[in-house]
Image 1 (cartoon, rainbow, N blue to C red):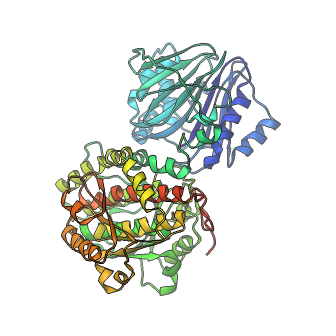
Image 2: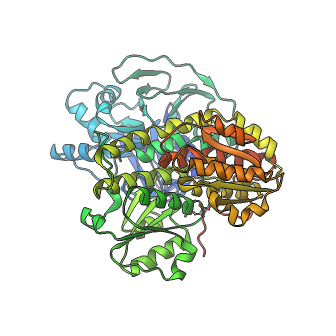
Image 3: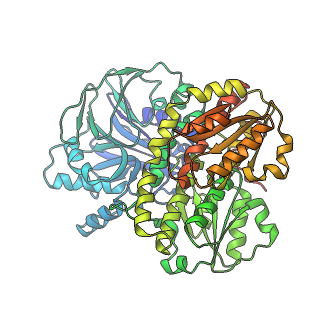
Length: 612
Ligand code: M6R
C-alpha cells in the first residue's frame, strides 16, 4: 500500500515527483525517497518520516534530471527507517527500484542472490528486484525493459514497480502484478503512479495496466507487453474526477473505498502466509518457538472497539478448533480486573493503529508479568508492534475512515491464519482439515467481491430503514461478534442507537425493547446454530419487530420469517464472519448517507485513541 510516482520527459523530474507524492500523502506514510538520473549519474535520496523531511533535504541539496521515480512507504518488511525506504538499488548503483506490494519468496531469492555475491543494504523484500535485474544484465539483457521481463517471473507475490537504469536516461519502466499501477500520458512527458490523484494535475489521460504487464515509457512513446514480450493493446481513458474524488478512487467517501478494498486486503493478508503446497501456514514475525507455542496454557485477547470484536471471533475460532482456553478482554478493563497470567500465558492484542493507549498499557502490564505478547497489527513500527514480542501484520494499508472496515476483515483473516497454524502445530487440526480450511480461506476474497457487486439491494434497504430510531443486531457463535460489530458500525456513523446481542440472550431482557418500528438485523448463515437462530428470529418476529436477515444464498426458508433478506455466498461457518460483516458495513454506510452524517469523520470520534 505504498505510493509510487515516476516521470520521464524533458522537464524537471524532482518537482513533479514530489508533487505527486504529496498528493498521495493524505494516506499517511512513514518514509519517502526519490531516484533521479542527473548528468549520467543515478542519484538517490531517502528519508524516514513524513515527505516534508525529504523535501527539506532536497531543498538543501537538490537533485535534478528529467527522469525519476519516487516512493512513499507504508512499511511491511523491515522497520520504517531510512535504509528500508525506497528506492532500492543493485550492488553497482546502476538500477533503482520502487515497489508497492509483497514479494512472497523474497527470503529464498535473497539467500540465492547473497550466495552469488550480492550485498543487500536493507531488510526489505523489494531490494531483491534490483539485484535480480542486475543479474539479467550480467547475463546479457539488452535493456531495462527486457531485464524486467526476464527477472520478474522469478518473483512470486504482488508488485507494482517503477524502474530506472543509469545507462538508459530517457527510459522509465514499470510493471504490475496484483498491486495498483496506472500510467499518465502527457505532452512530451509521461508518468506512472500507484493512484490517479498523484498525476491528475498534470494529465487526465490514463492507461490502466493489467496484471502481468510491463511498460516502457519515453517522453513521447509508451509500449505495453506481457512478460514474454508480446505487445498488449490498451485504450486511453479520460478521467473526469475532481482531485478530491480521485483521492477516494472515485468513491464518495474513504469508508466506501475501504469497504471495496477488502477483497484485495484479505488477499494481501493471506499473501506469503500459505505454503507453496497449500498445506500449511507460515507466520514469520511471530517470534514464538514451536516449544513455546506448544507449552501455552492460556490466551487472553485484548483490544478495543472493532478490534475487540475481531478478538471475539478469534476466541470462537481458537476454542472451536484447538484446546487452548481463550478469554477476550476490553483493554480498558484488562489491567483493572487482576487477570492471572504467567510465562505460559500468551496475550494477543489486536489493533489497527498500534497506538491505542489502553491496548498499549495492556501490553506493558502483561510483559511485566512475564507473558509473551503477540499483536495483530496494521502499522509496522507502531508502539504496540515494537513493544510486542511478535506480530502478525495485517496488510490492510492505511485506513482513513474513522469507522474501521478493511482493518477488521484483515484482523479476522489473521485470526483464521493463526488458528490453522496453531491447530496444525498442536495436532488439533488434522493435516487434511488444515488443507481444506486453507483452500476455503483462499476463496473468501472472491466471495467478498460478490457481495460488493450486489449492493443495490442493500442501498434500497438503507432507504427503507435509515430513519429508524433504534436497532438490534442478533447473532450466535462465530457471528455473535458480527452482531456487536454491525451495531457499532451503525451507531458510530449514523448516530442511531444500535445494540448487538447474542440471540439466545433476547429472552433474558432485551426482547422487552422490541416494537413494530424496530429493525432487528439477524445474522443467520448456515451452520451449527442455524436452527437455534431461526427459532430466536421467530420469537422476535412474534413481537412485531421488523426482521432483516443476513443468510446463506439459496436459503429460501429464511424469507418466510423475515421482512427482508441479504444473501451472502455459502462458506464454512468459521469463515462466515468475514462475509457477514460486509453487508452490515454497507448498510450502516448507506443509512448514514441517507441521514446526511459526516461518514469519514463522525462526531466526537478520533481515528486513533491515544489517551485512556
Ligand atoms: O487502532 P485500534 O484498532 O487499536 O483502534 C481500536 C478502536 O478505537 C477502533 O476499532 C474503533 O472502535 C473504530 N472507530 C471502530 O470503527
